[in-house]
Image 1 (tube, rainbow, N blue to C red):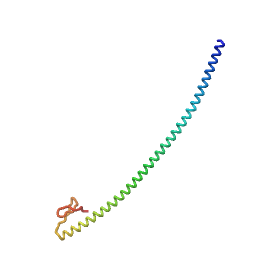
Image 2 (cartoon, rainbow, N blue to C red):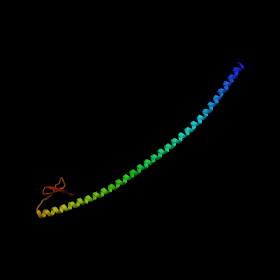
Image 3 (cartoon, helix red, strand yellow):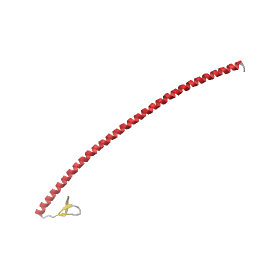
Image 4 (cartoon, one colour):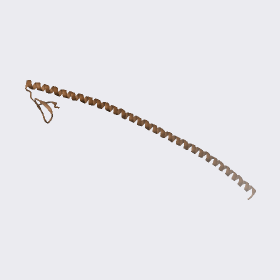
Length: 134
């Protein structure tokens, strides 16, 4: 091998080694960038998980509040309904007493007949149903 060929080979070797060092340096830089991006990704995933958990917690609390409000409203409506049912029972009982008294007075003075239908539970005056018997 001639001196010229040897120098050319050495220069080619040095150039290849320089390129290898440059490639190695770029690889290290890219590896560092990759690690940095992986760290960012992990942080973003953790932040997203926390946001989702926080949002879920807020939705759960809102749902619990709505359910609680609905239960309160239902209890109030039930109380009002119970009170109204009591008033209706009182009025129905009063109506029955008034009609019985009226029928007794009419039967004594006017001769109208009063009978109870066993099947329907309705008071009959002159063959016409007037009110339920309790």
